[in-house]
Length: 67
Image 1 (cartoon, rainbow, N blue to C red):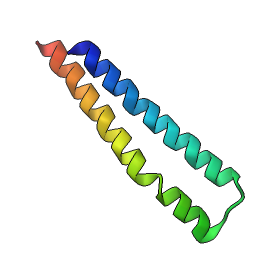
Image 2: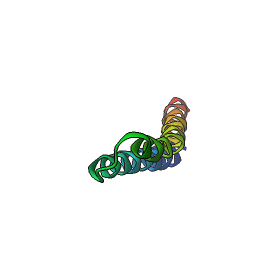
Image 3: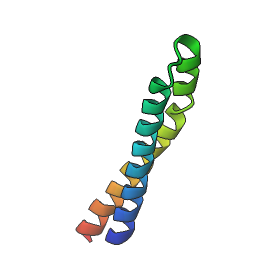
């Protein structure tokens, strides 16, 4: 359970890093106003999903340590 939790946590962290890179690229693209807001808005569900996966992975790690 511990190894699975670590893998799930790393998957979530990779997703968070991907969102950060996507936001950085969006800001560097030179878009402004509603175009930039729309592009960044599409990253929000991915960001929240990655955060949820990370939390689940950390919960598995803690659960695995308690067993």
